[in-house]
Image (cartoon, rainbow over all chains, first blue to last red; front, side):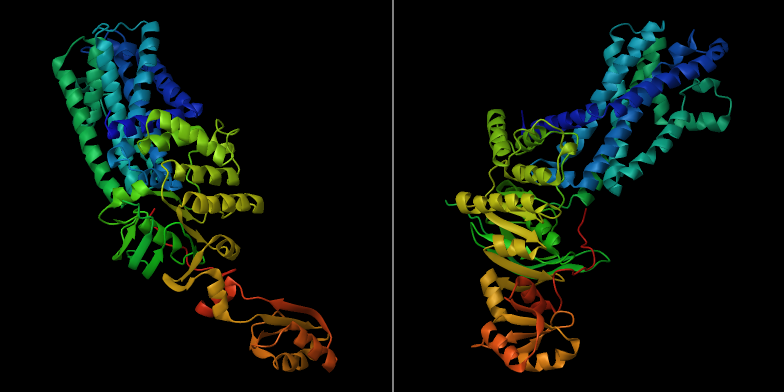
Length: 258
Length: 324
């Protein structure tokens, strides 16, 4: 293994150890999106009878939500942890080792992606128990997990950029409502073509979160939709790339080590 | 080729945007195996200097070589030969001591077997074997500092930077840490650059002391040399009757020049050839009664006072501006 890979592996392990030893973080990140799923699908169940609605049950339609919602939770937690590392001087401790800059940031992000995948497995299990049938079959599972990891990475990279820019965990926590609003202003609870308000539909169309959710949703309710998957992976990757570029710039400003 | 364990800085300057000149042209040389005490109050520029010497912060001007490597051009090489325990042990409260040592060893590129062996060796060295698998959040301040020191030593550095390592520690923990730092320098030949605001720490531990105030090095030498610069001891006396103070001052001034004395009392620095017995005899002859008579040997605080015009103990300056 190259040095950078070893460094990233150990930093990811440290972030995972840290997360697992704070069960409260794991619990809320895992449970809240499920509660939200059942509340929303219970309340909007009859929406499945709307003409043009793409699924037979609202629960199946909404099962994509917790993959992204849970990813948002673990991503915010990861960025808050990075903010804490900066505040406590732990990042300086790491910076005093020969560790390269990329692994120093990647540790928290990869841990977030791993936790996002773990959560997604739980959501899939719960969805199956609740009677949702995965139209893409078993082969769809790894693709769903990959998209869940991508969602965690995308939100995590944005949070990381903010953590590195501001140097404190409170600013990152303040991001949560912003991301949550972004989640709502998407096709999260209604297909875009059924959103009546023009402004809402326009925002949802511009919102990359819509495409992440639609890609995930297609695997649950439609099977294999190449366009939806291409848009999901494309938007997710573009978000990660842009946020990582912002993180790298912020890292360069924060870590002035020679 | 023998390893160069020295630290050498010339004209080191660090200015912060819209801030003060935290370090204002420092020249220093620390020889291999030496314990160098960098003494100064809060905000004097100690931590900023350490951040520059450990490559965390580029100097605005000047040059520095640590372990033979330039801190600006050869940052990674500098980091490979130094260990550092910065102010306030930066530890992860949810990791154990063993987790910390494993992570630090991996980041320094130690092979797995060596990591394990070195980790155990350091846990024993700093007396944390029994607590090795407990989360750090349950550690006392002294335990955290000892772990901090162990982490700085994982890769067997030849130069060690300790930024106020004993601040906030109880006397017993402080003394234990001094013992360990002393052993590192004397037995292992590690060069130690130690910042402190404690006079006693610099006096006991350091081979040489640099005194920093407002970003400038105002004095440098062995503790004995610095104290010798101040001269002979002073005598302090407090009269039993407050009204005797002028007479007491007149009597004492026969033996030396007046210096800052205790409240309600008088102090003089003894001229060469006089000692406490002379003073006692004179007081007796004049019939002056004193409540307190004290021979005060020069301290590093006296050196600080002489060089800066104010005492180190209790000195409070602007908080130091260090990039975080």
